[in-house]
Amino acid sequence: MYNCYFRAYTMNSNIVFSIIGDVNGDRIPDYVFLTGISTPGSPFIQNITLVVRDGRTGRITRVPLSENAGYNPRVFLGDFNGDGVNDILVSIDSGGSGAIMYHYIYSFINNIPQLIFDFNEYNEEYKYDIIYKDNYKVEAVSRINNEKYIIDISLKGDEYLSEIYDENGKLKEPIIGFVNPLSGLYPVDFDSNGVYELLAYQKIAGRYNADSLGYFLNTLKWDNNRFVLYNQNVAIWGADKMK
Image (cartoon, rainbow, N blue to C red; front, side, top):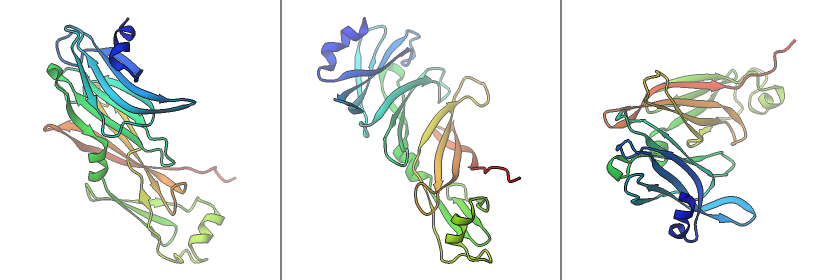
C-alpha cells in the first residue's frame, strides 16, 4: 500500500529498499525507504536518498547522502547509541575493485535526522602503516591506538617470496603496503544487551590491492556521544597444510 503512496512522491526515483520499525521514538512503526534512480540494464543506482515516513502522522523526511551512487543499497534498523530506539544504518556497495563500501548511521529521534556515523570520517581517523621487514615478516601499525602487529608471510609461496627476498630472507628493496578504506561494517551485539556494536573490516594489502595480507578488524562502541575503538584484531590468511 505504501508503495502506491510513494509513487507520486518519488517521481523519477524508485523505492530500492524498504523496512518498517520505530525510529522516531513514539513506539509506532515508521516506514524507512531508500529511493534511487536505476540504470537500465545495470544494478547501478544513482541519487540514493534516505526517506522516512512517520507511522503516526504520515510526515515525510528526506535525507540526502553525500555518497549516493552504487550497488545493493540497504538499511538495517537497530539501537547503536543506547537510547532504546532504532537507529538507521545505510549501506551501499561502491562496486570498485577495493570492495569499498559507504556506510551512514542516523539517529531519528523526534523525526530529526542526526548523523552519528559517517564512513568518510572513519576513514580519516583510522590510519595505518604497513612495512615489509626481513625474514618474511610485515609490520602493521595502527596509528589510532599505537598498536603494532607482525604478520608472518612465510606461507605465501616460493614464487611470491623470491620476488621480494634474497636467499637469506633479506628484503631486496624497501616495500610499503597499505590498508584499504572501510570495506565492511557489521552490527553485532557482542554483550547481548540490546545495543549494537560495529565490526569494521579494512583489508591489508602488500604491493598491490590483490596482494591481500589480511584484515584489520575494529570493534566500535558508542561512548560519550561518539563511536570509539573498543577492540582491535588482525586476521590473516591461512595456507594448505603441507604434508
